[in-house]
Amino acid sequence: MSALPCAGAVTERVFTPAEANSALPEVREAAERLVALRRMRALDDEQRTAVTAIGGNGVGYAAGDLNAAQGELRELAEEVAACVEELTELGVEVKDLDAGLVDFPAVRGGERVLLCWRVGEDEVAPNRNPPPVAEVVPAPADAAE
Image 1: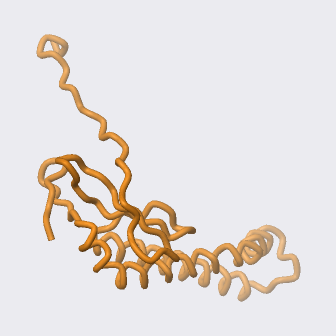
Image 2: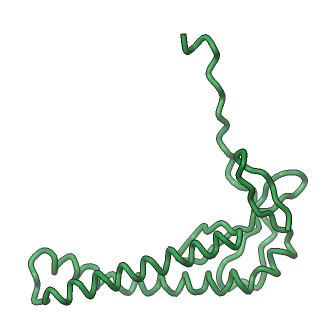
Image 3: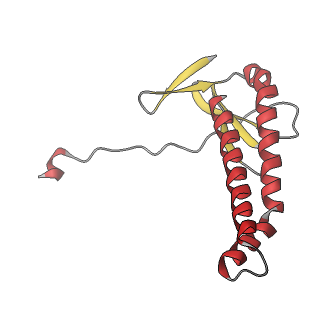
């Protein structure tokens, strides 16, 4: 495992293609769980609509139904956040929650690149260049006067 300094004191994990593919079993497990949770969330859209209706005019639901539905939605959101955190701790960048798309930071030819992988693929894709990091240009010294 190697590290590339980024944004001053922050150290980012950098993967070789072989390291990224070796990390896939752990990444795959968390990413597949994330995608499944997001699908459950999509299926629960109807329930969220019901929660809104319950809060508005009742539509035949008891207050206990409202509390249960809100609790389930909160729990689902917490599980999604835990998956994202787990993937981040593994060193990958989560790019698409619904597709399970993650990037493994890498360096090729002295430049930062991203090794892409999504749920359902066998190995990481070669790479793509990350978006450019905005440069901060200090104001001239006389501009503050």
